[in-house]
Image (cartoon, rainbow, N blue to C red; front, top):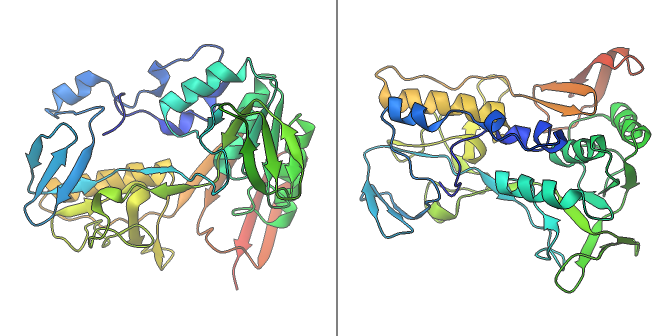
Length: 330
């Protein structure tokens, strides 16, 4: 893969990793290099495939080397969406996705006059909370009226938004990004309403898109990801897709689904690996689940959040930060 590091816990990057005074790389490790040696797994870090030939069953690497295969698993993950506005490539505009991004953010955050997080989803909120815990001057702008609007109803969303304000994050809700200004390095952020924020560092979290360029214009790529069966196998026998790429049939909640969460990627990797190497095939059957940490809050999400609820039932109180919100559709 393109990463220069062995597989690591990417979900930590926007949480503990940003909050700690010293960057602790060991806590990020999923497994060390000895694990690969023990299990006789050949690794190619900082190496990308540039061609993937389905018929001939071979991949061509950037260094010109070719690798033949009988079976393959597509696990290229996703990349940050870059908004269609001016200045997206200016210096000090960070798209938090990799360990390198997080290290750069840690280094710059302490020396800039202010930080603006652009977005209101999970990654944006986690990053803003973590940077604020470090006593930094943090703002957040989001085009919608409350945070986590893809996952929370208006009442809980309003409570969470107010929680961020009380913890010192300067919120600009209902503000849509119009562009980043500066010659080579960010100086201002402009909104579509005409407001201009003087900011030295921006963290952009406006969604992610699957890395399907390698298999674009093939049956392995579709408008919603890489279509797979309940066994995570594509229509090309012996080729699987997992994680942020897999557009799979949800046997529990119904319909087709693509998830971009750590838990889903890990579990799908286990299922695809077993199906590629074992005699007995395993279906992927998991209730969609993910979680987040922001300040002293821990929030679990279970079920289908692709459609906003029509009815909400809540047990517990916001004041005690212990509650269950049940969302119903229809």
